[in-house]
Image (cartoon, rainbow, N blue to C red):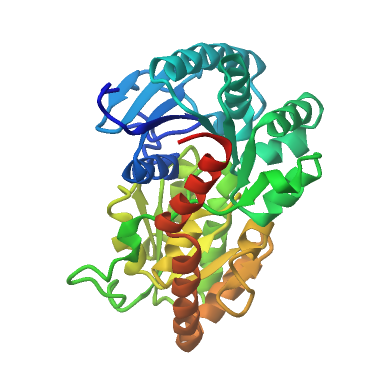
Length: 397
């Protein structure tokens, strides 16, 4: 960093960060958005993250944001794509991440370390913090606490050890905070707030774009990655039950992943092609246009922390139909501003989609409520203000 730059340097240690070489180039984008917004508050951000793919760049330098990717035996896959915990790979991850993180914190004189996800990034951050006497803020996003409770054993022990030794723990939902407290983490050390929604989603409808596009059809959109945890298969299985009731619909499936080929095959095999369009990976700058041209948002995820995708859809005034899981219940009141459906139940999902299609007044009323809720609770300005307070409570900035 420039010796004459009076900005305060901090380190982000994170499991995921956007990577153009990745099949999922926007994966972890909310971490990058947070970093970029924090640079507006007089900070410089040194990001330490794994180098997952063969053609990923080891280093990136931006004005107030620097990225160092540490090598490890990733098999060109995200951690979330491994069916079982890859023990040997994790050992290389921990060693490489520790060496790189320690070097970056010292090189850039970082005042504190902000770790995203308790394992493995949080564990590395806490060890580095102890070695160089730096405070650690730990953000738990959801999949990490789920691992701790599902895998138990060593994973729960390591997660508990990490969370207890962080100076402050932030979680993206009340449900995650409650689970964290059961591990013996002091309530006074926990702050709860979601990740923010990009500024572009708060803008008015783009010129020339209206919700009547799609040849007069009602547009239903899903924009989760096509990975097993997001269970887009359930949506595809529900579509035949919807179109048998009405053919004035168009399902947009945005995103990519290991399930895409199977889902496309399912659509063509069942003759659903006229009602389904696979968009592939959509640039984040284009996603506001996709959402604002749609009327109904569907998420079939089996697990979530606080879904930024849901918050983005709410900001855009869509009617959400999402799985009845704790993270979604914090934002959606069933029958009021959206519908909650049993996970992996295509019949319940189809019924709720058909009900929403028939009641435009309900959709519009819910859309107004959702825009207000998301604007009040998920703007980056509010998130960064809270996070700056957290930083100042543990470090001299």
